[in-house]
Each structure stands twice: as structure tokens, then as C-alpha cells.
Length: 86
Image (cartoon, rainbow, N blue to C red):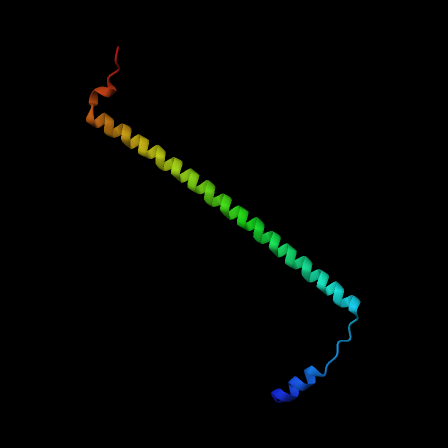
């Protein structure tokens, strides 16, 4: 079968489905599209929240380690800081 005969057979085809069937098909497609948009929206919120919390956690962790290293440096520079003052 060559391409032109196939195309001519398809173009001469008529739909045997009623308009009610097509409206139901369109409704189902719209439901799937809305569900896909909702899932994309929820995934985006989850991703942004994860990035925000992760950056906050690691910045706090990095800040705490920086403070500890500053305290150690201060003790090395001035060892009298370890001696309690009366």
C-alpha cells in the first residue's frame, strides 16, 4: 500500500461516534490536564520548600562551625581566656 492511497482512505473516513461520546472524551481529557497541572504545582512547592529548608539548615550549620572555629582561634591567641576570673 503506498502513501497516497493510505492518505486518501483516511481522509474519506467518517466518525461513527455521536457528539455525546466526544463531549465525554473531552471532559476526561480536561480532567487529566487539570490533574497534571495540580501535580506540577504541588511538586514545585515541595521542591522550593526543600531547597529553602536545606539552605537554611546548611547555613545554620556552617554558621555554628564558624563560631566554634572563632572560639578556638581566640583561645589559641589568648590562652588566659580558659582561666576563670575571680
